[in-house]
Length: 256
Ligand code: PGA
Image (cartoon, rainbow, N blue to C red; front, top):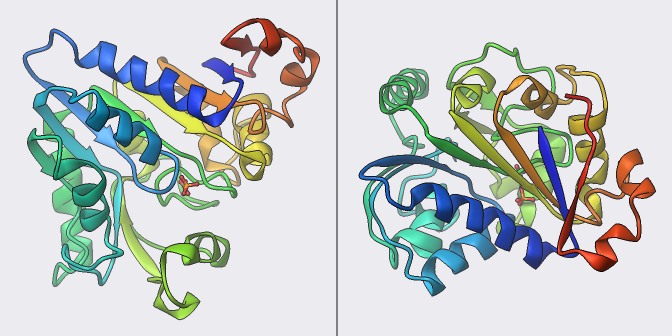
């Protein structure tokens, strides 16, 4: 686990974007795992500002709400179209179909699709409760793409995108922890103090299903990009205070 701490959220996004850009460069084909939520928005702006060439890139998204069709304004299909795909042409892009008649079958189909494509690099955010994608606390480590019930805290955290809490879907189709761990490389970005506890568990505490992101400690190629706020509960980041004044970013020690 390589952990980089940037001075602020914008610098963290720039670092993560630069890693992605470097990996895409010079490849004939690339499978890029994408995420939704607030965290990747700044990075997707950088794709657009740079007019990054993604015509050779196939994207696969982590998850989709059950019950929302692709045209629903709060669906992740719609989010991706608006934030990225409308302006940056990809070779192909895939997300789970939230309004499929049989969600379990759709989860199986999506798992097969992701496995057959093989993800070269997966971009991740992290939930305040330590979830990655919608793998909520308690999710089995060997979970494949599956239907999941969202926790009250996740629905509350995502409420800001909806009119009412009751509008936030109760279930989602999500890549499983095992699906995510199968990616060749993972880049996780976390910014802001509300992520600090989850980040502390992810990088400094023992792996546990109660904090799903701790599974990443077992992945051979993970880069975690934080801002100082998200790193503020990490012991080594606290000891490293001051280093950030001199450098664009600094590294901290991890459990893995
Ligand atoms: P956020 O969500 O980027 O909106 O903070 C991340 C997540 O819940 O995985």
